[in-house]
Image (tube, rainbow, N blue to C red; front, top):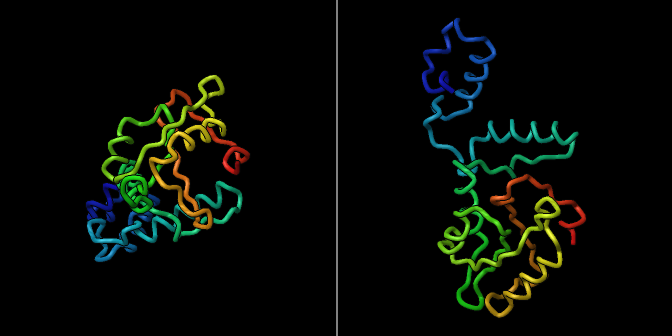
Length: 178
């Protein structure tokens, strides 16, 4: 990154050639060959293409599409953008968002700012902080009347964060599809 911020370093032979080559490629992908230039709101296309290639390699050929990659200045910022895009309505018609408990301390204020209703559900500590579908149903049932569920014909979106759990957990495909 230092080479991108100080392009004079491109000719510094003390730096490894691969570092200078990667920095040059990145600078050439930027308008005006400067990392300080404006870019697409979803991130620099060259970086998004590099991320898509990495994901496809990591996931053994499963397609990763550049148009579906969104780069942000941090997870909190990205979450705010997503929640604001998906939120709408007021009172009984406001958007409800299922959130895991425990959750990041910044999530509740973020939902409040976006005008969304927090619909908390407990993660199962004894099962390594797993999601339990009956707990999700309980959270949905409890929230009925406080927010309006979207029409079932609409495309449904799920945004999940493992929150402040002491151990990472991967939700199984079976639970996701339930």
